[in-house]
Length: 399
Image (cartoon, rainbow, N blue to C red; front, side, top):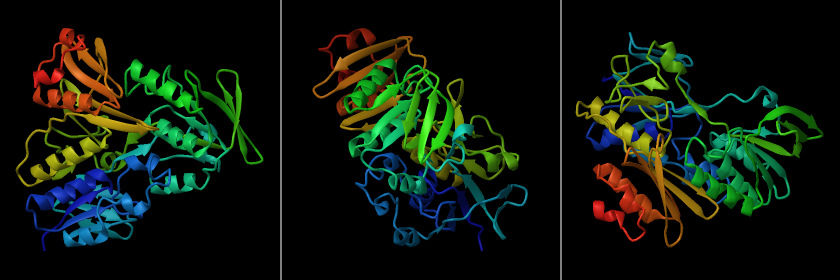
């Protein structure tokens, strides 16, 4: 019997890779091994539609059990791989070893460790998986006071749902501004004002020094000298690539499991894709935490596993939904030296340039600007910053 292609991880990248193998005509055994009890599911709606109760859990699933079976893809849930042995081409689970023909690591990311002062407290929550959200939803009641530690996308999306549910929310961000690593200052300003309009308090350049509990409530001593009393705390301080299995197996790691342009790791017959993997980009390496990257990189890995690989050249795009605002981002704004803001019919878009070259767009309720920017980046089209400063100029002319 042919040893299967085994995919370690149960998220978007794992599912996309398995499906792509079948789409490319691979008919031999494929197995997904995931730690969670649920089959592969979408993660972005966790902090939005699922947390709000708008979606039930079955709407999160990427495929039904029947669809996985119909594709002859084995999905093992609640199974943790404890060891990879590249020499014997085996993975170890509780009480068994499985041989693989080829192996893909799609282990995703794990939450950064909780700050010590929050460890072991019942009123403290994280939001990384389905079980985390189910636990948080049980505590979501109008009138409750909630502190959100971290002003990134997860923290702000959760704050938006909480505020609309009727909770009194305070967001505490250590950096000088919310979303500092993800967007430019103008977009941060927009979302700060948006949240404050819904009654959310935003504290920037602020940290938590001490934590005390008393009769089910938590008192946070803040670096600004304030003591904030709340009923629950969500810690959303970001994630780290899940590299422990790879490191223990002697596989090279560099801001994630290091791969080449084809998704191959330093170990023979082992690939990596998704949030856990870094790849060559420009003069350095890049690791992306996005659905788009998980899908596209997994497709590239599947093709390379079957001998049809081409170098992976991503065109990053991201999105976030908060209240009635949809933020859509195409490209990477890092290192920009010029930004041009253009107002549209329903929203606004910020266009970023570096050394005269268009590198990214952040569109708020402006889907046409997002799509135009995305197409320009994918086509490698030139976009003149001076022309963009003229409101009458239509950037679609550059396509």
